[in-house]
Structure formats: structure tokens, C-alpha cells
Amino acid sequence: MSSRQALNSWKKLTELAQQKKSQHMNDLFAQDSERFDKFSIELPKLLLDYSKNLIDSETMTTLFELANECQVLEWREKMFSGEKINKTEDRAVLHTALRRKSSEPLIIDGENVTQSVQVQLEKMEGFVNKVREGKWLGYSGKRIADIVNIGVGGSNLGPQMVTEALKHYSDNCVNVHYVSNVDGAQIVEILRPLDPEKVLFIVSSKTFTTTETMTNARTAINWLTASSFDENAVAKHFVAVTANKENAMGFGIEEDNIFGMWDWVGGRFSLWSAIGLAIALDLGFDKFKELLDGANEMDEHFQNAPLEENMPAIMALLSVWNTTFLGARSQAILPYDQTLHMLAAYLQQAEMESNGKSVSWDGVEIDYATVPSIWGELGINGQHAFYQYLHQSNNVVPADFIGSVESVTPVKGHHATLMSNFFAQTQALMTGVNEVQVRADLKAKGRTQEYIDKVAPHKVHKGNRPTNTILLKRIDPTTLGSLIALYEHKIFVQGIVLQICSFDQWGVELGKGLAATIQDELESDQVSTEHDCSTERLIKYYKQAQQN
Ligand code: F6P
Image (cartoon, rainbow, N blue to C red; front, side, top):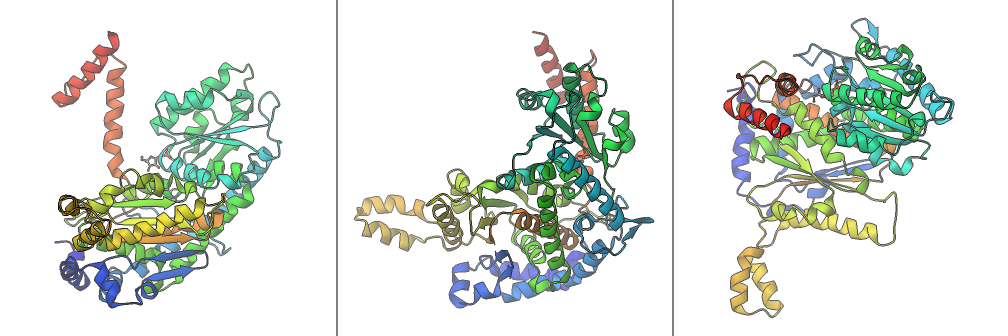
């Protein structure tokens, strides 16, 4: 048994979960007309309604006790103050320092982080302005028209998700493209229409060792140099963002063109650093700063609000409640805002790479469910695809519904249609419809008894499906910054409660190592016999088929 399971609050929550499983949210709402007031939090531009969860005041009080027993507030302070809470890698976790407003020094391993961040922001600003004002010229003297960010995982998902979400705020001074996949189909299609004399590549890689990114970067260099006889072309068309300056320089990137990273910024939390360069180039530096400000607003809320009013903490505790205690295995992210079409993909990495683990930070095997698998899609598209499953399958999938009060691109009639579905779905998932009602409805429509008997069981919706509703005033750099930081801190609290080191990702290493060996085999005549027979035969089949 892990030490978490020995906590009083944990034991009590286990009992409460047994009781709650036989309750229906419809009854909880009928018994308490104040549920919305009790179970919602309003911040200036963001509302969270969590009343449509299988909770009552006792559940929430016990969840807060759990947070206290797990010392969430103490851990929160450790994170903000730069203590090395990434135990397995012996690193601080300070993405919050990237958007901090205070000028107070924050010293980590002798470095004043506040100052280093400021220096980098100034370097970014100077560079962004130079490119956007047409003062940074390509090798043939033309201004930059296209930015191609090459990176994967945290060096891609955050910047690309934000670029997509804030398209409306771009002045199209440059066009931004993202290459993440090592499948050549992506880079070839992206580069095909571009003019090498006007392209600027950003090679984003914290480690500067990621094979996929290095392969794409090499292809980009070849593409550029094939079109140019100028030996300085790479210096004019390539910048890098990395913590591994040496490798970047070895790769041929000019020292001045390298933007630094720090080991205290995890890849999946790095869009606030120079990893966000493509965002700043697209929107202008002021808007990038607004994004940071929005995140900082959420940091301040998270850092100062008591647990009972703390949005990220409450979302984390609800996730633990739904997953670890009530047994949900996945969680849907359902934005009803076109701009957020990459949010689910972004949160998959943020949450699953952080907390998808089964060993506690003490190295002890965990035998309770940790985090759910995260998946999702834009709301309306999902409604016509997998909502059938959400409503009627026998797996309960808790869902976050995220919508905006105002559309950034209002078109008469559209937003009301979109948002009516948004509200209708959380209501339907919660209330469901029982067989008595189904039969009465069919009868009222004049259906025959035979038809009613046949169809009624299929039309029953059990309801009682938990949802959180997040309503933003509108998507803009500030609210988006707050929304992302909300999830970052949710993930942090989840990790603390579940006793997981959220900031490493050893689980991606094994496959990486094997891929390197197999790549050698694919490119030579040898196939190792050390594989299992399935893998060995597949590799042989593939190689043979290539020769036919
Ligand atoms: O997929 C694993 C991972 O290490 C992620 O954590 C990271 O965001 C991504 O690869 C890219 O890493 P890098 O920025 O070092 O290229």
C-alpha cells in the first residue's frame, strides 16, 4: 500500500466513492438549488462550473483534506521558489519564472533566473522586431516572408496550438508553418510553395539531439543550400532554440542566432520561453507578452487562492476523484471554439507525459489509477462522431467543455447555434432520460405501442456523466495564457496528490533507443536476431518488400 492510501482522507474518499456510485446527479441538483453557487469559481475572464460532477460538499471537503494531507500548498511554494522538485532529474521546475512580473532575484544554482529571463526576452524582442520590420534579410537581401518552426513534442505542440488559437490576432506580417513529423511528406509539402530566399527556419529542440528534429533540420539546410551559392545562407536563414548550444553550433548555426533554454523549463511547459519565438514572430512581441501576462494572472491566482477557491487545484482534485476513486479511465477535452482545435493534442502531451506513470516519486509501484488517457476534438465535430459513446456507452468519460462568451469571428447566428449545443450537451450528459420519459415522449408523438416497446430501451440515456464547464470571455492572448496555465497547475497538483514526479519522461526513452538500433538495421544488410520473432520478421518483410 502506498503512503497516500494510508491517509485518512484517502480512506474516506474510498468509502464516499462507493456511496456516490449509487447516486444520480439529478437527485443532487434536486436536493440543492445552490449547487452552482457552491461549485463554481469566477475569475475576471474565466468561469469554471464544476457542479455537474458526482460530488457534494462532503466530497469536496474531503478532497481538500486530501490536498492538505498531501501538502499541496507547501509543494506549490517549493515549485514557485525554485526548489528542485523534479527529483529524478534533480531540477527546479520554473516555467512560472518565464512569465513572472516581479523583478526580485530568483537564484537557482547561482544564476539569477529573473535576470536571465529578462535578457532572453529582450533578445527575443529585438529579433522579432528586426524580422517583422524587414530589417533581417535573407542571403539575397529579401525580407523574410515565411517562418518554419522545426521541432516536436513540447518544441512544437505548445507554439503551434497557440499560433492556431490566436490566428485572428496575426497581422500576417509573416506566415508561420510547423514541421514536427519525420515523415518527409510533411516537410516536403510545407517547403514546396516557399521561396528559400525568404524563409527563416527555427530549429527548436531543448536537447538538440532529437532524431526527428535533426533529420528535418538537415533536410531544411539541404533545401536551402541547394538553391543558394552563398555560403552565409545558413546564418541568415537558421536560428535555434536550445539548452544545448554546443550541438546547435556543431550543426552549423551561428552563435548569435541561438536562443537559450534552461534545464528548469520542461519541454511541455516551454512555450513561454524562446520556444514560443514563432508565436511572437506571428503576432508581434506585445501580443506574446499578453500571453505571458495571462499565464501570470493564473499563476497569481494559483499561488494565492485558498484551496477551496483555487481553480487549478479543484480541477486536479476532481480528476483524481473521477479517475482514482470513481474509476474513469479517460477524459475528454471538448472545446466549442474553432480556435482551440489543437488543445486536446496539446493537453495529451502536457498531462499524459507528465503524469502517465505508475511509480511514485519514492520509486514505489503505485497500484491505484493515476491519470486518465486524454483525448478530444472540437465539440460540434465530436457530437457527430463520438458523442454517441459519451452518452450511451457503459464507460463513463468525464469531459471538460470549453467555450467562449464571444466569438473572435462573429458570423450572424453561428455562435448561438454553437453555444446552444455547448450548454445542451453538458445538461444531457448529466440528466440523461429514463425509460418512463422516453415512453411518454414516444406516446405523445403518436407512436404505436409495438414501436414504443421496440425502441424505448435504445433511447434511454442514463446520464450522470461528469463534466466541467469552462467559459472564457473570448479567446485572446491573455485568456489563452490563463487557460494554458490553468491546466499546467492542474497537472502539477494532480502529480503531488498522486505522488508522481510530473516533470520527467523516462517512458519515451526505451522506444527511442530501440528505434536507433532498428534504423541501423534498416539502412544496412544486417537484421539482429536479438529482436522477438515478430519484430524480426516484420523488419525482414519490410526490407524484402522494398527490394521487390
Ligand atoms: O517525446 C519526448 C520529448 O523528450 C518531449 O518531452 C519533448 O518535448 C520532445 O521530446 C522534444 O524534445 P526536444 O525539445 O529536446 O527536441
